[in-house]
Image (cartoon, rainbow, N blue to C red; front, top):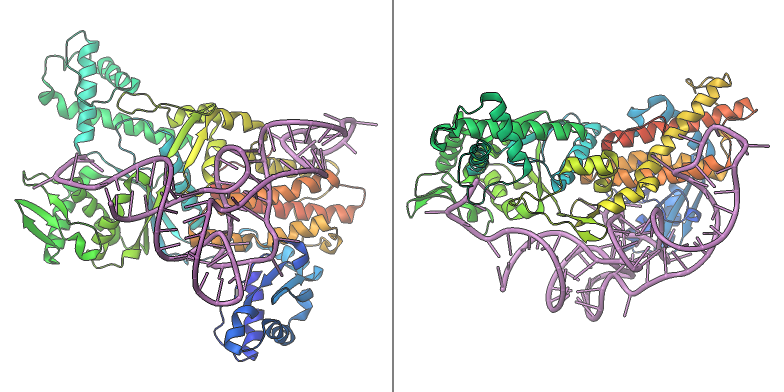
Length: 546
RNA sequence: GCGCCUGUAGCUCAGUAGGAUAGAGCAACUGCCUUCUAAGCAGUGGGUCAGGGGUUCGAAUCCCUUCAGGCGCGCCA
């Protein structure tokens, strides 16, 4: 729709002797300013040395495709306002009905491959609400880019190698000993949640007291592996119930086992980005804009966490994606510059890696902060929130906010609102349309083919407003894809539902007038196509009954 | 001390890559179900866009600065 107008404007402006004008097209805030508007004449006034309104006039006169518009006005300081003709809108709507997804979505990615890594929580405890935010945003972004024509790989990075999983194993081991009535000191800084006892009990059920005589050194591998795998299983299950499935799970251990870490270090060494100092091996991150150089191998010979991160990102890069997106909690923002430095050191532009920060979530209950301490095992899990508030509501709350805004999640408010929650507002529109279709079929009407519908019967303001809104969906969609901002879809859907409900309330779709009914059913079908598309992208259900 | 994020209605948040008179939901108040679902609709109020300066035809949006909140700044993971 706006692509079409852009072409019209380009041709017209070319006639004025300007070849490469940047044409902005926007949807005016007020209806009286038309369906689309462009401030392009104002921008051109400097180049052409003429007053903006005069240029606007020249542009309008140069437009050939006048029949697409009901009106073209020049307003204010030099805006050109376009109002589409009803015939043109009808034609466009019919195209939408015919092409469905192909119309509402655009192939922006052209099959290019993008990897999105998100959640990647340590498998040392259950997912909490902050992970849920990353999960909701990551999944929605993945769906969005996929819909936009990219081949997306959703990846979860599993930190199964470091000291944390070992500490998990030790925590479980200690609990295990205690449950068997033996005295065993709980490790300092160990994990204390109820889930630790759960895992310990599982081990007892499986092999009773086989390990009770052993020292942790002897039982370490078993306890660590069993515990983190159990956690990972639980995490995967939580995510599945949250509606999120990953394509690949990259294990950190595997990077070591397959010598990816060594290879990455060799690679950087050959590229002369490493040096030794004080018995440690350093990466020259400052050469690529980082604050300080970073240690990869400590003087005691141990790798730092950064070493496997280098190997991991090298692996990502070598998989040949056109872009890599990491979604991190904002508390990791200090790592952006060092990883971008790695990307650059490996010979790629730093833009090849895009890090999306998801800000912290403050959990409240009735306005009061809920105390969270992972160490003490006091925290509200994602599963608990899902069960108390609901997955769709939880996701929607995450997706109605920009990822980089701090978020207050009040459990009471989320629940209270559930009756009039915005997510239901959108889903309800879809359910109502389904219901209309059922009703229409009961009346013996055909609700499948709309080729023959006389869409020119859709003439009241509410209907035209809805049609225009539908036809701007591709524009919103494109903006969301290019800016990598799924929340734009969320707001669009609320606006669309906000046009449908009043219409529904005021007018009947199914009436005695068969032809009008058919046209209105066609409109409903178009709304449904867009609603379903948007809800699908956001990872939300589109129930037919509520 | 340095870096990143944030500051918009009582509350939670949008504001479409600088555009026209600043938007939604919640909360408050008043009406609407013998009709395709009332998880809905109609109506009523509410603003120093944190403060100050600058850039230009035009700024919530870009730059500088001050203030406030959050998060980071290890040979931790």
